[in-house]
Amino acid sequence: MNAYISRVLSGLKEKNAHEKEFVQAAEEMLPTLSAVVDNHPEYEKTGLLERFVEPERVIQFRVPWTDDSGTVRVNRAFRVQYNSAIGPYKGGMRFHPSVNLGILKFLGLEQTIKNSLTGLPMGGGKGGADFDPHGKSDGEVMRFCQSLMTEMYRHIGFDTDVPAGDIGVGKREVAYMFGQYKRIAGAFNGVLTGKGLSFGGSVGRTEATGYGLCYFAQEMLKKRGDSLRGKTCVISGSGNVAVYAAEKATQMGAKVIAMSDSQGYIVDESGIDLDQIKSIKEIERARISEYTARGKGVYSAGSSGIWHVPCDIALPCATQNELDLEGAKALVLGKVKLVAEGANMPTTMDATEFLTANGVLFGPGKAANAGGVSVSGLEMTQNAMHLSWTKEEVDTKLQAIMADICKNASVAAKRYAGNEEDYVTGANIAGFLKVAEAMMAQGAV
Ligand code: NDP
Ligand code: 2IT
Image (cartoon, rainbow, N blue to C red; front, top):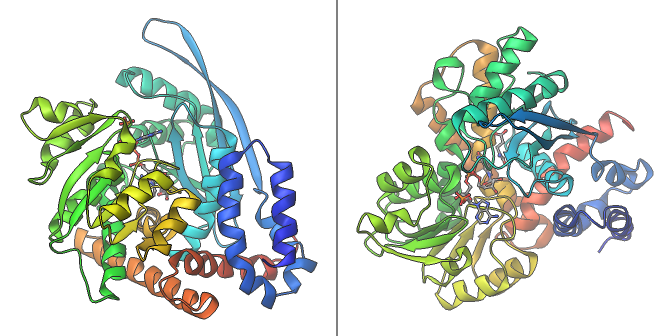
């Protein structure tokens, strides 16, 4: 490893020892940049990496809200404004009890590289709160979102920081946050993406991450003269990313045989009935185990068992570190050909190494799941132009962006790692170079 990188990494580990996901993301990313850092001694003189691994700004605030029984509750929320070298901060908000600063910093770092890969002018940001939307009424979620935005509105703006959704934040939550922003700021603009179609949202944003993931997987397979057609597919999660990955994979001729949620997984060898999943998860907001109550499939408790279902393609689309070495071994035993990450950092580092060492094609999240933020970028463009594109226009642009990301990652992988299928190195380098160039040009800021 390049000596400068090694020094920055040990400093980062010392300073952020308690932020294990942030350390993990940096440990995965920085060493892969060795070849380019070797070529750019000026990075060290200008402290480029020290700046790159430190978020530009972190905002932490309390969110008091009143539950249905009249009791006041308090959650902790953050906005991490990670890097604005190439555009306004851009990235989702996550509502999940596990949310803490380390998780949001890892996500901000990943987002910075991901957004650069899209080719659109977006910097990296991420935010969230340790609020659990499960089991809350619409009124409680609304009051929580309004209280959160009452503080956050002063820190964001359509040309400074543009939040969107992530785990626990979908259309409903974005809409409540948008309504409160508009009310306080007195401005109707594209300050959030993932908005409803009747108030500035883009067609295709809901589907974009999952669809983009399948377009990316298809590109990777195409290079091997293969495709998704006829493949069996296992998809973890049953949220926004998982559902639309399943929809597109099915449209592309694959058969999705297993999906999960945080409690367990279902297997349906005849092909998952997605209408049922959508109704269970999107409308009833219930558990995936409900699927079997409709006379379909087999349910098993525990979400990690899903990797033991033999398949050609595995798409982890739930959360970080959900696919560990044991899961990777099970997938290889089941003859998996491709793993592409719909979630952010779902695969542990040893699992990734095991998969690639066994010839499995591996698509890292910051490249493979960039479709969501890409269409968010297209939503910002449409808002700025005060017009709306058609479904076909958005989908054509999304397909082109995913193909470009795959090509650019592969070209960088070949050039710097001597292996055009090393998408981990390729994506990190291709994304980083553009951010580094902008940071160098703008001086030590
Ligand atoms: P959703 O909230 O819509 O769905 C999350 C899914 O993951 C649910 O099925 C949930 O199960 C499951 N899940 C959440 N936490 C855990 C956990 N700790 N262990 C096991 N399963 C869990 O989120 P999204 O689909 O939007 O996000 C999924 C992943 O994709 C995240 O990593 C996110 O960062 C990433 N991503 C999202 C994008 C987007 O546009 N939304 C874009 C790019 C990446 P349950 O229902 O039981 O809670
Ligand atoms: O991880 C991600 O890329 C997202 N949650 C989407 C971010 C966005 O701004 O659309």
